[in-house]
Length: 228
Image 1 (cartoon, rainbow, N blue to C red):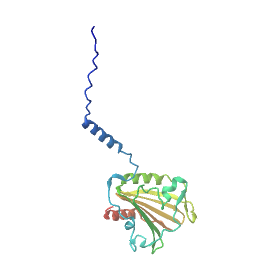
Image 2 (image 1 turned 135 degrees about the vertical axis):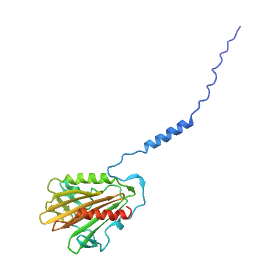
Image 3 (image 1 turned 90 degrees about the vertical axis):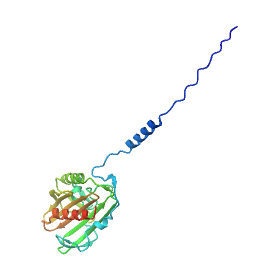
């Protein structure tokens, strides 16, 4: 009698893992997952800097301006906080201007009294990362220019008389200016953008003729000398 014994299959050879390939794959996946879309005009997170206190960038007390020496005062209740129609918001607002890029690390604002009675004000935002200056100005110009009809500014004291947009210009790199006007009242606006700051200027007077292009460029040059 012959007994047949079935031998079991030999154990499989241990499976080896190429750790170098796995490591590289994991690293590559991590790098790819870190990529995000860049918001138009927003700060570039690849270049972070110490935050510059926004208040140090405002026009100093007693500084001589084209409208005379300026004395700091609180921003009054006559400044617009909303506008109608909606497409005129960018052209009309000083406080809470939608032209200011998001992501600011610090913010400050002040009004000014001048010897000639001109209403002046500044609001400045500072950033840890570099701004895309051409994009901020280009998008700002487009937003302001969309106001093609009568605009009514709304402040805590009530609605204004209807105003019209006039003279949207980009007189220098990083500078946008425009005017909102009605009979007997004129408001000149400026946006000055540097690598890590966005400054909005407002000058209102009974008489037209304030040279906002020159003034906004001068203020931008002053900001750049402060390394922002």
